[in-house]
Image 1: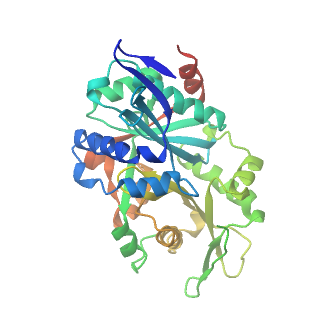
Image 2: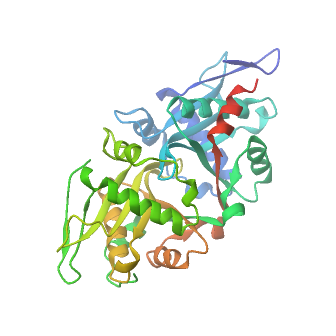
Length: 177
Length: 176
């Protein structure tokens, strides 16, 4: 799919290939920088390559690249199957990002459409994601697409335990419940 | 993937093991009980047959561990449902979708044992972290997760879970 952005440059949306991993990690770090959490990025191109393009891929990736230079990426999205015990198979959109210089050209919407189509083709009942509440542009955009904010609506909270916490947790003896 | 491991805790007489196909009707009933507790009973559209197929197809769409007593090893008193997810920053992780213990079996450590089993499975799989979602008013659950070291990302970072339903997905892909 080609998206004409200017006479000089066309952008295409395509499935990521293992040669894209360095560029994808560059964009992951760019997004993390924007979210003020770049120090939390531990993934490398090699890890991403093994996880996304190995024998048992853990996630899928669609990228936006320049048509004349496919190795140059201007956007990406990462997604994978999840499960809802209320609705069954669902899809999780882990990241969607377009580099600032290429925004306002419909690239983000095309990435979303490709992920939504992938989800429908897989028989998914919903598309889940997370957004930082202060990222008003993104939140407003998602809500215009029809997304529901579960924190605002039902006070759902996301929680996380890192690996060190997991290791500590399995050895906890004190009973709480 | 479907290896069965059991941990017998003689003091409490609780067994935690991988779910078996014959467990799925009972697990599905507990799933409904959890949805009612979370005030979302009417939102469950999954059928028992779909749930069974999703749990035991190859590869399974989700994984499940159950709790029974040693005396009645076929009666499910609690369950936890989980599946692999991926963090773009950390890599391979685990998501705990559900954790539920029947009310009459609470305060015996069953929830903690289910939690620890899922966590151990995650560690064995090489997970970099464990994620979940909790309703903020569910203080008992939230306290347990916090006690085990979980960070509330919504409080700490203002991270909000969102979703787009199937109708929204269909509308989006039809837009030019």
